[in-house]
Amino acid sequence: MGFSRRRKAKNLEAQLLACGDAITRESSGAPKRAGTVAEDLGLGGQPVLVVLTDPAIYWSLLIEPESVMQMRYDRISDVEQEEGHIRLTERDPEYAASLDDPSNPYGETDFDFQLRSQDSSFKFSGLLNRALLRYSPVFAEKRGQLQRFKARQGTPVWSWSKCPYCETRLSSKVEGAVVCSACHRCFCDADLAPI
Image (tube, rainbow, N blue to C red; front, side, top):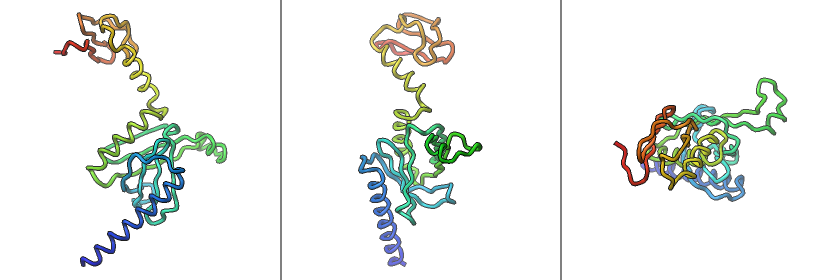
């Protein structure tokens, strides 16, 4: 029994190394930010190695390491996440042109996967979200909100005319604090703690 377990562990380690090598070749050696084992739900739960790099997310089947797939963050148009279950949808204009299929005019493909470990899923999801926030068009508005908020740092909040997040005119102001009536966010000067 112990020998069988060791053999399975050695086999898994060899598969993970082969997948990692294939992903490194496919990604042209782009720096790896995180990696984890997951189940590809689109392929009936097949185990895959999923790796985050700077430009894209890559994955490879453990049983077929040379079959490497990828999605560039800047093409991911939809993201759904719930308790380790992640579904990414990519829109690829080149793929759409090659398909010439009226039922898929945007060249959409999905990667639907379930992270195996709860501990690694939290960290992995956080790193994926950070990459998507930085590059994906889904989060373009969020990037704009953060930029508007950062641009106002250091100026008294009572002098702000619009909410940096929803850009609604701010009307609820008191000394050192403002509340947006549309998105209900409260902003305070750095030296004031909200009540």
